[in-house]
Image (cartoon, rainbow, N blue to C red):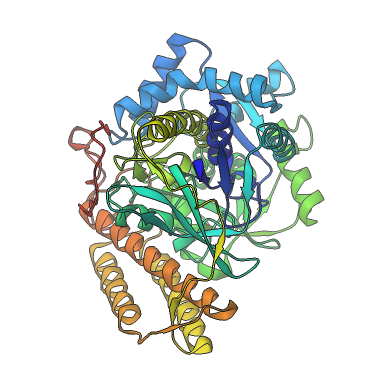
Length: 548
């Protein structure tokens, strides 16, 4: 029996695990893939950045800016806690965990326009996160605090013991066996919802299923209609983030001229931010990329010969070194599902409203709004990962002192009986239906959404739910193939539940707002802003806390 079980090994999960262990908890850290996974360690990008306010006055300005950029749908209490929590969280990351943070190479470089974060209005204290430094520092902390690792453990479900949650059920994808892991408190840090789409800029272990599991156990979701869609390379490399700062040097093969803006003006505007937004005229660039479909939007790059900005040097050198793509190589761009601005609703301590269940990082929503400032995703993972870890450890201490807890569930593999049909047919159907889900979400729920397209998406999701529900099953003794098949169906059911909630949120949000574009409705009226409604199952909300 663990005090705290953390599920997810991106920067949020790692921060939560170390923070809980520092507070004296016995901690297990589980991941669907290998250690150091998720979007924090996605290989198709040159690194992660984060920003911090310089002082308290700047923290107040940052909070106001987050609320403005979020188009009025971010939760103010979370924004304020975040803005004032970044500096102590980064000090903890550097001084206690030992992560080395990069800085611009010079004062001149730091003052370049490119170092203004996406959608922000000023330069802030920029820091860079490199994969190697994070891996080295967190690996040392995991060893130092004796945190148990459960790699290649995909979450099947949370285990319910009537009045409370008591652990989690995993499939160990290496051994193809189910494993029951007991815990007094659990933290969900599994990433966002991009796993529901065909084309993504996140790792394969960002599955888009855990939010469905959270819904089943009484959590609510907030602002899940707001997703970041990003331009990325389709050719000559695929699944690679395109550095938006270089849009100003792009030479498209077709004109984007609009009534008030030339192609050059639109590309210069588009260079100021990474993810798609409906708020700015430069959305025309994203619409052109999206309309190009699978063949990709063709561009060539015309980089300057002299006084090359640092961000251009970094990106072009990385493309050449990692993928063999030279600066003059013609590129084809496509739109990819990337990060989520919404997710499981939490408060500033990472509490979900379900007793003993916490969440942090991109799996959560409320801190970000319809758009989000660049560099805040990583900082969000550290701030609320650290908060959730400390709160979960405290809860586990109180629970341990006040209740008799079954200590027999430490993490043993369990030969459970699982519902399976004919193994080959079962696995084929699950894979086929998952592919259909990804295709319909990509067709109807990317950057251009209409009432008709969302109605069609919801209708097809309901049909897939009925297909899965109508599959005849019979009990069978667990075996490798049967277990894998059962896992696929568990995952698919959770993905369908999340997909339906997302589409319903997109339908409810009838106006265009930030990253949510309704092609059949006008731009938002900021005076009418409101967070999306929470999707509640009503099955369990046993903890009387403020989730605001």
